[in-house]
Image (cartoon, rainbow, N blue to C red):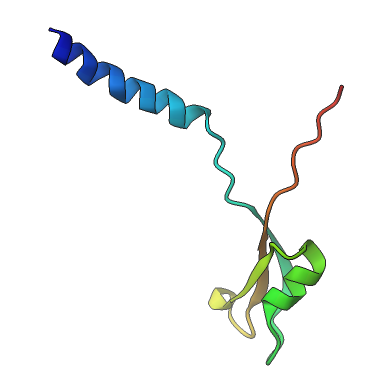
Length: 79
């Protein structure tokens, strides 16, 4: 009986643990069309800081869209 109880308790504990953890995958921003011979990452680092990365999303067609991924700012708390 004790073994079946622990079989149910462990998954519940993990579910609660993962439900309470906030997943932060970062924020994204479009920086306009990609420029031939220029890096999107450089443009993103100048705008959003050294933790930012950029890539050219060519799924939009043409030159593609320069997309930045950067850490989201912490939410503002009102006291």
